[in-house]
Amino acid sequence: MQETETKKEVEFRLIRDDNMPPVIFKPDDEDKVTVVINQSYLIWLSLNRKIIAGCSEALFDKIDEMLTSHLSETRMFERMG
Image (cartoon, rainbow, N blue to C red; front, side):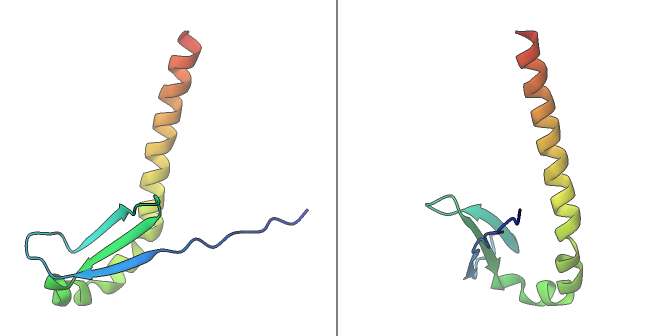
């Protein structure tokens, strides 16, 4: 049996706002991922581009850890009754 993996599209938006962080992940109106990149941090983002790109696995691990914790708690409450 072969699994077909559906590639999900990510929308990227550019802003220029000194009061916002350099990168934001947020849901759009259809709950899809939107990444907002703040051009006010262009030099910082450019200098740290490889570090930022390398964070994807660590970010996934943290989200996975949060999800496992949430599911474990939910299961514990289910078993309690």
